[in-house]
Amino acid sequence: GENVEQHPSTLSVQEGDSAVIKCTYSDSASNYFPWYKQELGKGPQLIIDIRSNVGEKKDQRIAVTLNKTAKHFSLHITETQPEDSAVYFCAAHPGGSSNTGKLIFGQGTTLQVKP
Amino acid sequence: EPEVTQTPSHQVTQMGQEVILRCVPISNHLYFYWYRQILGQKVEFLVSFYNNEISEKSEIFDDQFSVERPDGSNFTLKIRSTKLEDSAMYFCASTKDGLGQPQHFGDGTRLSIL
Image (tube, rainbow over all chains, first blue to last red; front, top):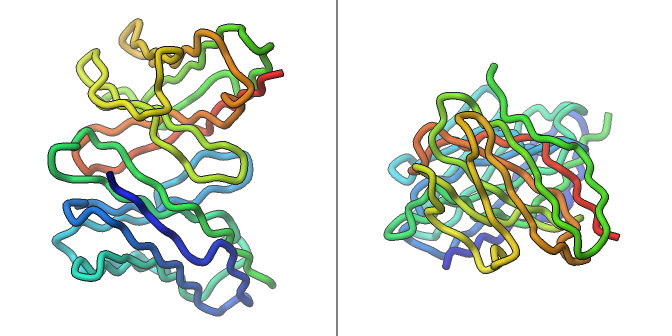
């Protein structure tokens, strides 16, 4: 089945710097890749997603890139702010016969933005 | 903005007891999911549910687990005889169309088994 690996596990940046989180997946049939932000005591909140027919997507300070050949995708946050501090999860939706909408998550990255 | 709601926020139960975790998905959504997150670990898929039946379940979702949509709004997860290792955050999620569409998560129920 699908396996998603996420790096780094922790990331500390200065306010205003950029942050990059990377994920790799194993199932070449996976076709949908969301990113979630989880704040303390809250559920995962979708921040951006990308489909397998697109290489890059941007929403204000957040962007996601997808390399299908290498089977990896990355989250880029520019001009980081203290409120960006949270745990970020990547996920993949397996395609093919397993098409029930389930998501396979990475291990999470704890991002700390220092003022 | 519509949201997924879960109750209770925290459930403490003795080992061997039954628990029911409740979720109210977004009203026009058709696909429903349960995930769990053991403290400090990744979010893990448990089960997907569509058209009043399970469409997929993981290895974690053994005979002790069951799901139900008893009415038009609630979606429940039952653990029949809880074990210590069932202690985790349990998240409900829903999506309008399950096939590679955004999933919206509730804030979870923290289940503590004593």
